[in-house]
Each structure stands twice: as structure tokens, then as C-alpha cells.
Image (cartoon, rainbow, N blue to C red):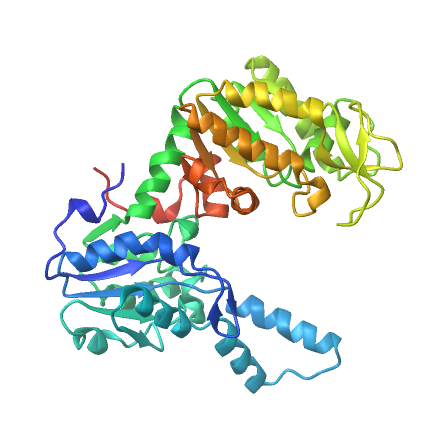
Length: 422
């Protein structure tokens, strides 16, 4: 396990902390504060320990990509995109100042805003005892994400000047080897995790190493290509592997079934065959859809059509799983001692095709109530449990989409690897 803020003395120390405040913004207003709320327990604990100061840093969006998209959109509309437009766009979308003001209200304390990540040592030293500072968006500096380590180290060294202790509580960016998430640790004597990071590791690590058996993995989403590594990793410990969503049709085609107009990755047919063979060799039960809810087109108002069998007619595409498939899911999930869920089993954004994913959410909640350990990771799965108001019924809902996926793949995450261990 990683060392956390509770394992070290913080009184009188200057703390520099990486948080994940990459929150949805609109017209400079925070739209969803889930990530901010997730970091509050660590922030409040640090402040209770009477530190000399607390400096927070985070990215917000991807300014360079966002500007590029905005330019392309303007060009398509036949409009110019000037330097002033670019500055106004960044100020409205990617600045941390509105986030720092939002945090100040939540804490009931002033949060000093620094307009750059560079040149702030004097301002940090000038903070009152226990004062808080929020740095501007780390990704406003190209060094943050640079592939050139000397460039990254330039920013990392500067950030290290602002603290005696480095705290990383930004699990959502732990899979990124960036200046503020990993490289800074080279220049810090003490580097520990926050409570959010600790919780993520506590629940995700057993799913990869030694989960309570039987373990059921529910892997959905659109593409096999994005989930093949996690499927291979979970195959080592799973008793059953439920494969749903768009990726299921590639597996069904690999078995020789007709899939109509359903989403398919023909380049991954052989990969799917290999995985099915590997599962058989490990005695892992692969559960694929045996019936479907189809539609003639991919649209929210498309009429749902029941397909009572594995094969999908040529004029339809699979949009959700049917009742026979859900019965198989129920049997596997309710008999599990541990469950990991990453990806929906249908197009749950469309009300007519949300039943399968909703039923999975309820089944996982029921299994958790019976004593199973459940971990939900990945943006769409998290959105699903939130949609059905079941997040509080799960053992753990991960805050990191890409990070949780890479953790489940068995990869070492740079933002965790640099932290001290117990």
C-alpha cells in the first residue's frame, strides 16, 4: 500500500498537492463538482494539521487541443480565429480561477490564485500560516506534457520549490507521466498519496492481484480494441467474463453468428477467437448475448425490436441485451464474491435501449448488499450508475476513466509508482 498524508507529520510543512480538478465548465462556471468533492477530505485533513501552506495544482481540459478544435470549427463556418479569440476562448474554458473561487466557497477560506505555474515562490512564501494557493492550469505550459524529459524537469523543479511534501490525490491523471503527476517526485524528499488515491488503490489492486472468488468481470463498451488488454488481464482471476455492448458483436461474429448491421471490428475477429480459446483453457465462463434488443438505425427515437435468439437479422443492429441474456447475467452476478464493471452492455444513453445496463447496475448493487465487493470504473459505467442513482450502493466507484482501465490492465501507473510505500 502507498503511504498517505496520515503516515507523515504535516505541521509547519509546505505542501504541494496534485488534484484532479478537470471539471466540466460552461461560461466560466463549474457544472459538476464531483472531482472537487472527491479531493476535499484530503484537503481538509491537511489544513487541520496546521501546515505552513498548501499549494494546489491541476490541469483543466486540454488547451492546445481545445483551441485547435475551436479554430477548425471557426474555419468551417467561414470565420476567422484571431489571437484575441484564442485568448478569450482559453479564458472562458480552461482557466483555473473560477475553480479556485468555487473551492474557496466550499472551504469557507480564501484561496489565492496564481496566474502561472512559474515564478510563484515569493507568493507562496508570502501566504499566511495555513494559507491556500491554486496554480493556473498546468497544461498552459507545454513542459507539463512534453515528451522531452529535460523540458518536463524544468517545470517539475519549479513546482518542487513550492513545497516540502508532495501529495498526489489525482487518481484520474495517475496514468500520465507528466511534470505535475510524476516527474516532480524526483525533486521532492517526501511524496505520499491522498485519501482518494489510497481508496482507488485499495479497491482496484485486489481485482488485478487476488480478488475474492468467484470474481465476475463485466466488460462492455463500443470496441474490443480499447478493452482487449483489460479482458486479458482479468481473465487471470475471473470465474466469469460478461462481454456486452458493441464489442460483443465482434465476439459473436467470431463464433460464426450473424450480427446484422451491428457495430463490429473485423480486424479484431482473430483476437476475439484467441480470447475465447484462452478463456476455455482457463475454465472461465464467457457470457455473450443470447438474445437482443435491436433497431433499424442508431437513433434515440428508433423503434426497439426484440430478437429472440443469438443471430441478428440483416436489417437490424444490436442496441441492447434481451431478457434471456439478463437471466444469465443475474445468475453470474448474484453468485459473485467480487465484481468489476467497466463499460455499459447497451446504448444506455437512449431510453429505449437502457434496460440492460440498468438491470446490470441493479444486480451489482444487490450483490454488493449481499456482501460482494464491487468496483465500477470507466466513464460510461460511472455515468450509468449515476443515472440509475446506484453509485452509493457500490463498494467503490472509480474517479479515473483511463487510469482505472490501465490499472485493471495490470499496468504500472506513473503517478502511483513515484509515491512512497509502507
